[in-house]
Structures are given as structure tokens and as C-alpha cells.
Image 1 (cartoon, rainbow, N blue to C red):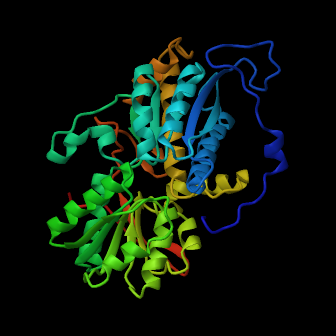
Image 2 (image 1 turned 180 degrees about the vertical axis):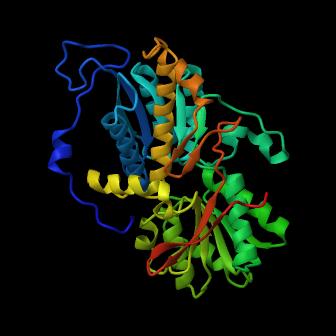
Length: 408
């Protein structure tokens, strides 16, 4: 899907765009096509501009598709769904501002996003104080749900408003280490991270699990993710005996880092997490062949449960691919829709006056068969689906190599 062209918007969809009424109120005098239905707004926070916009736009579109599907199916009696996307530019300070915008809008009963764990750190407490449900399809930082104590086996839930359909870096790092050591038979790795919440946490998890298996970290370094000249750090890798470079970070920096590594004569793969698993990575890296990445869940394209999503996404005519988090975003959005449904059904068919509290209370009971598998949340708000997939760049595109759960 990442490489295929997306058809243009159909006239029927364009003509069927909805003008929606305000949440929690009924506006019989409005010209809105939603009539006397109550509108529930779902906020979407993601980087819609900048280096990571390919992932962010896939998140926005997939959330939009979920809302449109629920409306077309009249999935919740008397309720019309609308999304409100805001661009966080992958900047924590902007994400914090967006959180306040969502909170101040009484129409918003849940928020999907963000992409970046560092952005989420600035959004979680404001949402918790406001009792506003947040479901991220992409945040993998373990501490977001379990606190720093998870490293010593003392996990404590941080915010009861935060949930995610993406699994944690504890699981992703363990899976990557197991794949690289036991399947790729690589025993010596040079480790680099971008010093951000996601990248540093993922690299730390990988290091812990790789050395536990018997692997050796032959060097450790950090980069500025805004840089694009990495020749100095690449030179350090020479003569270390590294058989692979593991990078904790995202594709805009990973791509030139990998290419400069190969240009220096070091023909070893770069491996990263879901932050580099984007169709943009091989486009930005002329020597990406053989590089590796892990991502959450099984390949969406291979799941029977995802075929309707893929077909509907193509038919909707979005200009941007759904990318790595499309299915997870659809499921994150649908979990809020399910919570709204439970809240309405538990209140004689009407949305309760305190819609935010009702939606949050219902999240504990949300369980459904989604695009990426069975969706439910554990006592920390983490997804109960721990399946991961390792991918390799083959013929300038990501190809699935292996799916499974890590041995923790």
C-alpha cells in the first residue's frame, strides 16, 4: 500500500461530505446534514507538516475513515462523528498547546494521537486533569503508561486517561534483539540513538535484551536528529567489529545515517524500530537495501481483518498512504467510537450529560475485533496485542520477514 498510487476522491464522496452539529446538543433548526443527531468530535493530534508528515497524514486519514465508516453504518444510534485534526509539528510544546485546544472544546470526547512519545509526555497530564480520553496508535515509550519503575519491575499506571493500540518499547526492543541475535545471527552491534524519548528508550530496551541474550554492544553514541551529516559518528564505527548498527530514532535521520554508513565502505545493515518503518525511508536512502526495522502487529496487508480497511482507504481517495500506523489509528479511533456506543447504550440511548466521563468509564470494557486484531487494554492502558514484525528492505521497499511475540 505504501508504494501504490491512491485514486482521486470520487465525486460521490466529495458530495457526501458532512456539516455537523455541536456535541451534546440538538440543533433542529440547523441546515446540517446530521439533522437532530448529537455530534461527537474526536480530536486527532499528529505531525501534519514537516519531516514526519508522511506518518502523521496517514494517522489523520485513517481516523477520518473510521469516523466516516461509523457514520455511514449509523453505528451509534443518534450520534454523528467528526474528527478535528491538529498539527503538532512533532514538537512537544505545540502538542501541549493542541491539548489545551481539545480540552477547551466541549465537543471533543476523545483524542487520537500523537505520533511522538515526547509530544505525548506534554499532553498526558492536561488530558488527565480534564478527564479526556487519549488513545495513541504510535506511542511506544513504556514509561508513558507504566512509569520509570517498569525497568525494575515496579510498574505503576501513570494516567487513567491514556491508552494505546501500539505496544511498548520494552516489547519492541526485546523483539528486535531476539530477531537480530537468534535469526539474523548478528552478535556485535553498534548502538546510536537520537536522545529523544522514543529513540533513547527503544535503544535502551534493545541494549538490555541484546546483552542478556549474549550479544555485545561494541560502541554507543548519540546524534542530533536534526543533523544530516553523520560522517563523524560513522567513522567511529569502523574497526569496532560491528555487524550491524541499531538506531533508536526516526526515518528522516536514519536514512542519511544508513547511506553514509554504506558510503564509508561499511556494508552492514542499519536496524531500527517502527520510527523508521515508513515508505519514505527507502526513498531517502539510496543504499537502504538489506536494512531492517520492527513494527507493531502483523503486516496489515496480510491480515484478513484488514482487507476491508485497505479497500475502503483506497476508495476514499486519500492522497497520502496510510503508512505504518494506519490500521492502529483506525483501531484507536474505533475504540473511542466503541466507548461512545457503550456510554449511549448504558444511558437509555442518549449520550450522558458528562460525555467525557462516560466515555472514559467505558474504555475499560472496550473489546472488539479490529483491523490489527483483537483490541482491548490491560490495567496500564496498554494494548493486549504484543505481536511484532521484522521487516527488511528488498528491491527498495519494506518486506515482512518474521512475525511473533518477544521472549521477555
